[in-house]
Image (cartoon, rainbow, N blue to C red; front, side):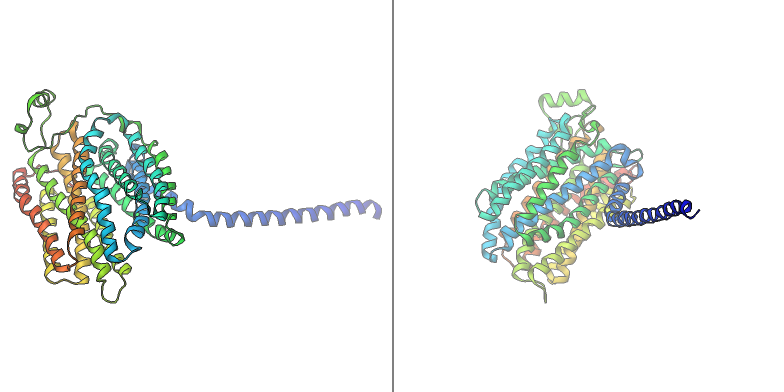
Length: 474
Protein backbone atom coordinates (compact mmCIF):
# COMPACT_ATOMS: atom_id res chain seq x y z
CA UNK A 1 0.00 0.00 0.00
CA UNK A 2 2.79 2.32 0.97
CA UNK A 3 4.72 1.26 -2.12
CA UNK A 4 1.62 1.66 -4.20
CA UNK A 5 0.95 5.06 -2.75
CA UNK A 6 4.56 6.14 -3.09
CA UNK A 7 4.51 6.59 -6.86
CA UNK A 8 1.28 8.46 -6.61
CA UNK A 9 2.70 10.57 -3.84
CA UNK A 10 5.84 11.13 -5.85
CA UNK A 11 3.82 11.94 -8.88
CA UNK A 12 1.57 14.12 -6.86
CA UNK A 13 4.51 15.89 -5.29
CA UNK A 14 6.23 16.10 -8.63
CA UNK A 15 3.09 17.45 -10.18
CA UNK A 16 2.78 20.00 -7.46
CA UNK A 17 6.41 20.99 -7.84
CA UNK A 18 6.09 21.19 -11.58
CA UNK A 19 3.01 23.31 -11.21
CA UNK A 20 4.84 25.53 -8.77
CA UNK A 21 7.74 26.02 -11.18
CA UNK A 22 5.35 26.70 -14.05
CA UNK A 23 3.44 29.21 -11.96
CA UNK A 24 6.68 30.95 -11.02
CA UNK A 25 7.79 31.11 -14.63
CA UNK A 26 4.39 32.44 -15.62
CA UNK A 27 4.54 35.09 -12.94
CA UNK A 28 8.03 36.16 -14.01
CA UNK A 29 6.96 36.24 -17.66
CA UNK A 30 3.87 38.22 -16.75
CA UNK A 31 5.96 40.69 -14.79
CA UNK A 32 8.36 41.13 -17.71
CA UNK A 33 5.45 41.71 -20.08
CA UNK A 34 3.90 44.19 -17.64
CA UNK A 35 7.18 46.11 -17.40
CA UNK A 36 7.47 46.04 -21.18
CA UNK A 37 3.96 47.39 -21.57
CA UNK A 38 4.67 50.09 -18.99
CA UNK A 39 7.82 51.18 -20.86
CA UNK A 40 6.10 50.95 -24.23
CA UNK A 41 2.89 52.71 -23.20
CA UNK A 42 4.21 56.30 -23.24
CA UNK A 43 5.29 55.88 -26.86
CA UNK A 44 2.32 53.93 -28.16
CA UNK A 45 -0.09 56.01 -26.09
CA UNK A 46 1.42 59.24 -27.40
CA UNK A 47 1.33 57.95 -30.98
CA UNK A 48 -2.30 56.91 -30.62
CA UNK A 49 -3.16 60.28 -29.08
CA UNK A 50 -1.47 62.17 -31.91
CA UNK A 51 -3.16 60.01 -34.53
CA UNK A 52 -6.54 60.51 -32.85
CA UNK A 53 -6.06 64.30 -32.80
CA UNK A 54 -4.82 64.61 -36.38
CA UNK A 55 -7.51 62.30 -37.77
CA UNK A 56 -10.46 63.81 -35.88
CA UNK A 57 -13.61 65.25 -37.51
CA UNK A 58 -13.19 63.37 -40.77
CA UNK A 59 -9.56 64.36 -41.34
CA UNK A 60 -8.53 60.71 -41.32
CA UNK A 61 -10.97 59.73 -44.04
CA UNK A 62 -10.19 62.72 -46.27
CA UNK A 63 -6.42 62.39 -45.97
CA UNK A 64 -5.95 65.72 -44.17
CA UNK A 65 -4.66 63.87 -41.09
CA UNK A 66 -1.78 62.40 -43.09
CA UNK A 67 -0.91 65.87 -44.40
CA UNK A 68 -0.87 67.23 -40.83
CA UNK A 69 1.54 64.46 -39.85
CA UNK A 70 3.69 65.10 -42.92
CA UNK A 71 3.84 68.81 -42.13
CA UNK A 72 4.87 67.98 -38.56
CA UNK A 73 7.73 65.87 -39.94
CA UNK A 74 8.68 68.77 -42.22
CA UNK A 75 8.79 71.21 -39.30
CA UNK A 76 10.87 68.86 -37.15
CA UNK A 77 13.42 68.29 -39.92
CA UNK A 78 13.73 71.98 -40.74
CA UNK A 79 14.37 72.94 -37.13
CA UNK A 80 17.14 70.33 -36.88
CA UNK A 81 18.93 71.94 -39.82
CA UNK A 82 18.29 75.40 -38.39
CA UNK A 83 19.90 74.44 -35.08
CA UNK A 84 22.98 73.07 -36.83
CA UNK A 85 23.41 76.07 -39.14
CA UNK A 86 22.76 78.62 -36.40
CA UNK A 87 25.43 77.04 -34.23
CA UNK A 88 27.91 76.96 -37.12
CA UNK A 89 27.26 80.30 -38.81
CA UNK A 90 26.09 82.40 -35.86
CA UNK A 91 27.12 81.21 -32.40
CA UNK A 92 30.58 79.80 -33.10
CA UNK A 93 32.31 83.13 -33.87
CA UNK A 94 32.39 86.69 -32.48
CA UNK A 95 29.50 89.01 -33.35
CA UNK A 96 31.29 91.03 -36.03
CA UNK A 97 32.48 87.91 -37.79
CA UNK A 98 29.05 86.34 -37.38
CA UNK A 99 27.46 89.32 -39.15
CA UNK A 100 29.85 88.79 -42.03
CA UNK A 101 29.05 85.09 -42.15
CA UNK A 102 25.32 85.68 -42.08
CA UNK A 103 25.65 88.38 -44.73
CA UNK A 104 27.54 85.88 -46.87
CA UNK A 105 24.86 83.32 -46.12
CA UNK A 106 22.19 85.76 -47.31
CA UNK A 107 24.16 86.67 -50.41
CA UNK A 108 24.87 83.09 -51.48
CA UNK A 109 21.63 81.44 -50.39
CA UNK A 110 18.75 83.85 -49.97
CA UNK A 111 19.59 86.25 -52.81
CA UNK A 112 19.46 83.45 -55.39
CA UNK A 113 16.40 82.11 -53.63
CA UNK A 114 14.68 85.48 -54.12
CA UNK A 115 15.24 85.01 -57.85
CA UNK A 116 14.17 81.36 -57.81
CA UNK A 117 11.15 81.70 -55.51
CA UNK A 118 8.86 83.42 -58.07
CA UNK A 119 9.58 80.53 -60.43
CA UNK A 120 8.65 77.82 -57.93
CA UNK A 121 4.91 78.48 -57.87
CA UNK A 122 4.39 78.73 -61.67
CA UNK A 123 6.67 75.73 -62.23
CA UNK A 124 4.66 73.60 -59.81
CA UNK A 125 1.47 74.84 -61.49
CA UNK A 126 2.68 72.98 -64.56
CA UNK A 127 3.16 69.75 -62.58
CA UNK A 128 -0.25 69.31 -60.98
CA UNK A 129 -0.26 65.53 -61.50
CA UNK A 130 2.88 64.93 -59.44
CA UNK A 131 2.27 66.72 -56.17
CA UNK A 132 3.01 63.71 -53.97
CA UNK A 133 6.20 63.07 -55.90
CA UNK A 134 7.12 66.76 -55.63
CA UNK A 135 6.68 66.71 -51.85
CA UNK A 136 8.66 63.47 -51.60
CA UNK A 137 11.42 64.96 -53.79
CA UNK A 138 11.58 68.03 -51.54
CA UNK A 139 11.95 65.76 -48.51
CA UNK A 140 14.56 63.51 -50.12
CA UNK A 141 16.57 66.48 -51.39
CA UNK A 142 16.79 67.90 -47.87
CA UNK A 143 17.76 64.49 -46.48
CA UNK A 144 20.70 64.23 -48.90
CA UNK A 145 21.68 67.88 -48.41
CA UNK A 146 21.68 67.33 -44.65
CA UNK A 147 24.41 64.74 -45.18
CA UNK A 148 26.37 67.22 -47.31
CA UNK A 149 25.99 69.84 -44.60
CA UNK A 150 27.14 67.38 -41.94
CA UNK A 151 30.57 67.41 -43.58
CA UNK A 152 30.58 71.13 -44.34
CA UNK A 153 29.88 72.20 -40.74
CA UNK A 154 33.06 70.39 -39.64
CA UNK A 155 35.38 71.63 -42.38
CA UNK A 156 33.79 75.06 -42.82
CA UNK A 157 34.01 74.67 -46.59
CA UNK A 158 32.08 76.86 -49.00
CA UNK A 159 29.86 73.95 -50.01
CA UNK A 160 27.86 74.81 -46.89
CA UNK A 161 26.27 77.75 -48.69
CA UNK A 162 25.02 76.12 -51.89
CA UNK A 163 23.81 73.17 -49.81
CA UNK A 164 21.94 75.58 -47.53
CA UNK A 165 20.45 77.24 -50.63
CA UNK A 166 19.26 73.84 -51.80
CA UNK A 167 17.65 73.17 -48.42
CA UNK A 168 15.93 76.55 -48.54
CA UNK A 169 14.59 76.05 -52.05
CA UNK A 170 13.39 72.52 -51.26
CA UNK A 171 11.70 73.74 -48.08
CA UNK A 172 9.86 76.52 -49.88
CA UNK A 173 8.92 74.21 -52.75
CA UNK A 174 7.36 71.89 -50.21
CA UNK A 175 5.49 74.85 -48.71
CA UNK A 176 4.09 75.88 -52.07
CA UNK A 177 2.95 72.35 -52.89
CA UNK A 178 1.47 71.90 -49.42
CA UNK A 179 -0.62 75.04 -49.88
CA UNK A 180 -1.88 73.65 -53.17
CA UNK A 181 -2.69 70.24 -51.66
CA UNK A 182 -4.82 71.36 -48.70
CA UNK A 183 -7.94 72.27 -50.77
CA UNK A 184 -7.96 68.71 -52.15
CA UNK A 185 -8.13 67.15 -48.68
CA UNK A 186 -10.93 69.07 -47.00
CA UNK A 187 -13.27 66.86 -44.93
CA UNK A 188 -17.02 67.47 -45.36
CA UNK A 189 -18.08 70.65 -43.62
CA UNK A 190 -14.47 71.76 -43.09
CA UNK A 191 -13.47 75.28 -44.12
CA UNK A 192 -10.13 75.87 -45.77
CA UNK A 193 -9.12 78.20 -42.95
CA UNK A 194 -9.75 75.55 -40.31
CA UNK A 195 -7.82 72.96 -42.31
CA UNK A 196 -4.86 75.29 -42.81
CA UNK A 197 -4.85 76.19 -39.13
CA UNK A 198 -4.69 72.52 -38.15
CA UNK A 199 -1.83 71.85 -40.55
CA UNK A 200 0.07 74.92 -39.36
CA UNK A 201 -0.51 74.16 -35.70
CA UNK A 202 0.74 70.61 -36.21
CA UNK A 203 3.93 71.97 -37.72
CA UNK A 204 4.41 74.47 -34.90
CA UNK A 205 3.98 71.83 -32.20
CA UNK A 206 6.44 69.53 -33.93
CA UNK A 207 8.94 72.36 -34.28
CA UNK A 208 8.64 73.19 -30.60
CA UNK A 209 9.15 69.54 -29.65
CA UNK A 210 12.10 69.00 -32.02
CA UNK A 211 14.01 72.19 -31.11
CA UNK A 212 15.25 70.97 -27.70
CA UNK A 213 16.05 67.58 -29.21
CA UNK A 214 18.17 69.33 -31.85
CA UNK A 215 19.89 71.38 -29.15
CA UNK A 216 20.63 68.18 -27.25
CA UNK A 217 22.09 66.56 -30.34
CA UNK A 218 24.19 69.67 -30.93
CA UNK A 219 25.88 69.04 -27.58
CA UNK A 220 27.10 65.70 -28.96
CA UNK A 221 28.57 67.44 -32.00
CA UNK A 222 27.59 69.76 -34.87
CA UNK A 223 26.89 66.82 -37.17
CA UNK A 224 24.29 65.13 -35.01
CA UNK A 225 21.33 67.46 -35.63
CA UNK A 226 21.96 67.00 -39.34
CA UNK A 227 21.96 63.23 -38.96
CA UNK A 228 18.66 63.63 -37.14
CA UNK A 229 17.36 65.77 -40.00
CA UNK A 230 18.41 63.08 -42.47
CA UNK A 231 16.42 60.41 -40.65
CA UNK A 232 13.37 62.67 -40.32
CA UNK A 233 13.33 63.71 -43.98
CA UNK A 234 13.78 60.13 -45.17
CA UNK A 235 10.69 59.25 -43.15
CA UNK A 236 8.92 62.23 -44.72
CA UNK A 237 9.84 60.97 -48.19
CA UNK A 238 7.92 57.75 -47.63
CA UNK A 239 5.12 59.51 -45.76
CA UNK A 240 4.51 61.78 -48.78
CA UNK A 241 3.35 58.81 -50.83
CA UNK A 242 0.79 57.83 -48.20
CA UNK A 243 -1.28 60.88 -49.11
CA UNK A 244 -4.43 60.07 -51.12
CA UNK A 245 -4.07 59.84 -54.89
CA UNK A 246 -6.57 62.67 -55.33
CA UNK A 247 -3.92 65.26 -54.44
CA UNK A 248 -2.30 64.43 -57.79
CA UNK A 249 -5.49 65.13 -59.67
CA UNK A 250 -5.76 68.47 -61.44
CA UNK A 251 -9.33 67.93 -62.59
CA UNK A 252 -11.15 71.25 -62.81
CA UNK A 253 -8.07 73.33 -61.98
CA UNK A 254 -6.50 76.19 -63.89
CA UNK A 255 -3.82 78.80 -63.30
CA UNK A 256 -4.64 81.85 -61.19
CA UNK A 257 -3.99 85.35 -62.49
CA UNK A 258 -2.88 87.56 -59.63
CA UNK A 259 -4.01 90.93 -60.99
CA UNK A 260 -6.61 93.42 -59.81
CA UNK A 261 -8.88 93.19 -62.83
CA UNK A 262 -9.21 91.50 -66.18
CA UNK A 263 -7.80 94.48 -68.08
CA UNK A 264 -4.32 93.32 -67.01
CA UNK A 265 -4.75 90.13 -69.04
CA UNK A 266 -3.59 90.55 -72.61
CA UNK A 267 -3.53 88.56 -75.82
CA UNK A 268 -4.34 84.84 -75.88
CA UNK A 269 -4.50 84.65 -72.06
CA UNK A 270 -7.43 87.09 -72.09
CA UNK A 271 -9.35 85.04 -74.64
CA UNK A 272 -8.55 81.87 -72.72
CA UNK A 273 -9.73 83.45 -69.49
CA UNK A 274 -13.06 84.36 -71.06
CA UNK A 275 -13.44 80.95 -72.63
CA UNK A 276 -12.75 79.13 -69.35
CA UNK A 277 -14.72 81.52 -67.19
CA UNK A 278 -11.47 82.40 -65.43
CA UNK A 279 -11.52 85.77 -63.69
CA UNK A 280 -8.59 87.50 -62.06
CA UNK A 281 -8.13 87.71 -58.31
CA UNK A 282 -10.19 90.54 -56.86
CA UNK A 283 -8.90 93.60 -54.98
CA UNK A 284 -9.74 92.20 -51.54
CA UNK A 285 -7.33 89.30 -52.03
CA UNK A 286 -4.72 91.60 -53.57
CA UNK A 287 -4.81 94.00 -50.61
CA UNK A 288 -4.86 91.15 -48.09
CA UNK A 289 -1.82 89.66 -49.78
CA UNK A 290 -0.05 93.01 -49.52
CA UNK A 291 -0.81 93.29 -45.81
CA UNK A 292 0.40 89.74 -45.22
CA UNK A 293 3.57 90.46 -47.18
CA UNK A 294 4.28 93.39 -44.82
CA UNK A 295 3.85 91.13 -41.79
CA UNK A 296 6.03 88.42 -43.30
CA UNK A 297 8.67 91.03 -44.12
CA UNK A 298 8.53 92.19 -40.50
CA UNK A 299 9.03 88.62 -39.28
CA UNK A 300 12.14 88.14 -41.42
CA UNK A 301 13.48 91.48 -40.25
CA UNK A 302 12.96 90.75 -36.56
CA UNK A 303 14.60 87.32 -36.80
CA UNK A 304 17.87 88.63 -38.19
CA UNK A 305 17.99 92.03 -36.51
CA UNK A 306 17.15 90.80 -33.01
CA UNK A 307 19.49 87.82 -33.36
CA UNK A 308 22.48 90.16 -33.56
CA UNK A 309 21.10 92.90 -31.33
CA UNK A 310 20.41 90.53 -28.42
CA UNK A 311 23.72 88.78 -28.87
CA UNK A 312 25.54 92.10 -28.54
CA UNK A 313 23.14 93.63 -26.00
CA UNK A 314 21.30 90.81 -24.19
CA UNK A 315 18.39 91.35 -21.84
CA UNK A 316 19.28 92.59 -18.38
CA UNK A 317 20.59 89.76 -16.23
CA UNK A 318 20.39 87.21 -19.06
CA UNK A 319 22.92 85.68 -21.42
CA UNK A 320 22.66 86.16 -25.17
CA UNK A 321 21.43 82.58 -25.66
CA UNK A 322 18.72 82.97 -23.01
CA UNK A 323 17.68 86.34 -24.43
CA UNK A 324 17.30 84.85 -27.90
CA UNK A 325 15.43 81.91 -26.41
CA UNK A 326 12.95 84.19 -24.66
CA UNK A 327 12.25 86.12 -27.86
CA UNK A 328 11.99 82.90 -29.89
CA UNK A 329 9.57 81.32 -27.44
CA UNK A 330 7.47 84.50 -27.40
CA UNK A 331 7.24 84.50 -31.19
CA UNK A 332 6.37 80.79 -31.26
CA UNK A 333 3.68 81.12 -28.60
CA UNK A 334 2.19 84.12 -30.40
CA UNK A 335 2.14 82.22 -33.69
CA UNK A 336 0.53 79.16 -32.13
CA UNK A 337 -2.05 81.31 -30.34
CA UNK A 338 -2.90 83.14 -33.57
CA UNK A 339 -3.33 79.85 -35.37
CA UNK A 340 -5.57 78.49 -32.60
CA UNK A 341 -7.68 81.68 -32.54
CA UNK A 342 -7.99 81.58 -36.31
CA UNK A 343 -9.37 78.04 -36.13
CA UNK A 344 -11.84 79.02 -33.42
CA UNK A 345 -12.81 82.54 -34.46
CA UNK A 346 -16.01 83.08 -36.42
CA UNK A 347 -16.19 86.32 -38.38
CA UNK A 348 -18.05 87.71 -41.36
CA UNK A 349 -15.25 90.12 -42.28
CA UNK A 350 -11.73 88.68 -42.65
CA UNK A 351 -10.75 92.08 -44.09
CA UNK A 352 -11.48 93.70 -40.74
CA UNK A 353 -9.36 91.11 -38.95
CA UNK A 354 -6.38 91.81 -41.23
CA UNK A 355 -6.67 95.58 -40.86
CA UNK A 356 -7.02 95.26 -37.09
CA UNK A 357 -4.10 92.92 -36.46
CA UNK A 358 -1.76 94.93 -38.70
CA UNK A 359 -2.78 98.10 -36.86
CA UNK A 360 -2.05 96.38 -33.52
CA UNK A 361 1.39 95.30 -34.74
CA UNK A 362 2.07 98.82 -35.95
CA UNK A 363 1.16 100.20 -32.53
CA UNK A 364 3.34 97.60 -30.81
CA UNK A 365 6.31 98.38 -33.09
CA UNK A 366 6.02 102.13 -32.52
CA UNK A 367 5.75 101.61 -28.76
CA UNK A 368 8.77 99.29 -28.71
CA UNK A 369 10.78 101.80 -30.76
CA UNK A 370 9.93 104.77 -28.52
CA UNK A 371 10.23 102.95 -25.18
CA UNK A 372 12.84 100.40 -26.17
CA UNK A 373 13.22 97.62 -23.63
CA UNK A 374 13.50 93.87 -23.23
CA UNK A 375 9.87 93.33 -22.23
CA UNK A 376 8.55 95.41 -25.12
CA UNK A 377 10.78 93.57 -27.59
CA UNK A 378 9.45 90.20 -26.40
CA UNK A 379 5.89 91.54 -26.57
CA UNK A 380 6.46 92.80 -30.12
CA UNK A 381 7.69 89.40 -31.31
CA UNK A 382 4.72 87.68 -29.68
CA UNK A 383 2.25 90.13 -31.22
CA UNK A 384 3.94 89.86 -34.62
CA UNK A 385 3.71 86.06 -34.49
CA UNK A 386 0.06 86.20 -33.47
CA UNK A 387 -0.80 88.73 -36.19
CA UNK A 388 1.07 86.85 -38.91
CA UNK A 389 -0.79 83.62 -38.18
CA UNK A 390 -4.22 85.23 -37.93
CA UNK A 391 -3.73 87.44 -40.99
CA UNK A 392 -2.60 84.46 -43.05
CA UNK A 393 -5.70 82.50 -42.10
CA UNK A 394 -7.84 85.51 -43.01
CA UNK A 395 -6.07 85.66 -46.38
CA UNK A 396 -6.92 81.99 -46.84
CA UNK A 397 -10.57 82.82 -46.10
CA UNK A 398 -10.57 85.56 -48.73
CA UNK A 399 -8.98 83.30 -51.33
CA UNK A 400 -11.60 80.67 -50.60
CA UNK A 401 -14.35 83.26 -50.87
CA UNK A 402 -13.24 85.37 -53.84
CA UNK A 403 -11.12 83.12 -56.05
CA UNK A 404 -12.96 80.73 -58.38
CA UNK A 405 -12.47 77.09 -57.45
CA UNK A 406 -10.70 76.14 -60.73
CA UNK A 407 -7.82 78.51 -59.91
CA UNK A 408 -7.92 78.45 -56.12
CA UNK A 409 -5.15 75.89 -55.75
CA UNK A 410 -2.88 77.91 -58.01
CA UNK A 411 -3.68 81.11 -56.10
CA UNK A 412 -2.60 79.51 -52.84
CA UNK A 413 0.68 78.36 -54.36
CA UNK A 414 1.50 81.74 -55.87
CA UNK A 415 0.55 83.75 -52.80
CA UNK A 416 2.78 81.54 -50.64
CA UNK A 417 5.70 82.21 -52.99
CA UNK A 418 5.22 85.97 -52.67
CA UNK A 419 5.12 85.73 -48.88
CA UNK A 420 8.37 83.77 -48.83
CA UNK A 421 10.08 86.42 -50.96
CA UNK A 422 8.84 89.08 -48.52
CA UNK A 423 10.40 87.19 -45.62
CA UNK A 424 13.75 87.06 -47.42
CA UNK A 425 13.62 90.80 -48.15
CA UNK A 426 12.89 91.59 -44.51
CA UNK A 427 15.79 89.42 -43.39
CA UNK A 428 18.14 91.24 -45.76
CA UNK A 429 17.10 94.61 -44.30
CA UNK A 430 17.64 93.29 -40.78
CA UNK A 431 21.19 92.13 -41.44
CA UNK A 432 22.46 95.44 -42.87
CA UNK A 433 21.14 97.79 -40.17
CA UNK A 434 23.35 99.07 -37.31
CA UNK A 435 22.75 97.36 -33.99
CA UNK A 436 20.67 100.17 -32.54
CA UNK A 437 17.43 98.98 -30.97
CA UNK A 438 15.46 102.19 -31.37
CA UNK A 439 16.54 102.62 -35.00
CA UNK A 440 15.84 99.00 -35.86
CA UNK A 441 12.37 98.93 -34.38
CA UNK A 442 11.60 102.28 -36.02
CA UNK A 443 12.44 100.63 -39.35
CA UNK A 444 10.22 97.71 -38.37
CA UNK A 445 7.39 100.14 -37.67
CA UNK A 446 7.91 101.75 -41.09
CA UNK A 447 7.67 98.37 -42.81
CA UNK A 448 4.34 97.66 -41.13
CA UNK A 449 3.09 101.21 -41.70
CA UNK A 450 3.68 100.99 -45.45
CA UNK A 451 1.80 97.69 -45.61
CA UNK A 452 -1.08 99.00 -43.51
CA UNK A 453 -1.48 102.37 -45.23
CA UNK A 454 -1.44 100.88 -48.72
CA UNK A 455 -3.96 98.13 -47.99
CA UNK A 456 -6.28 99.27 -45.18
CA UNK A 457 -8.49 101.48 -47.34
CA UNK A 458 -9.04 98.80 -49.96
CA UNK A 459 -9.76 96.12 -47.37
CA UNK A 460 -12.23 98.31 -45.48
CA UNK A 461 -13.99 99.22 -48.73
CA UNK A 462 -14.23 95.53 -49.61
CA UNK A 463 -15.70 94.77 -46.18
CA UNK A 464 -18.33 97.50 -46.60
CA UNK A 465 -19.32 96.25 -50.04
CA UNK A 466 -19.61 92.70 -48.82
CA UNK A 467 -22.47 93.31 -46.41
CA UNK A 468 -23.58 90.04 -44.81
CA UNK A 469 -22.35 87.77 -47.55
CA UNK A 470 -18.95 87.18 -45.98
CA UNK A 471 -18.21 83.57 -45.04
CA UNK A 472 -17.06 82.55 -41.62
CA UNK A 473 -13.38 82.09 -40.81
CA UNK A 474 -13.98 78.67 -39.35
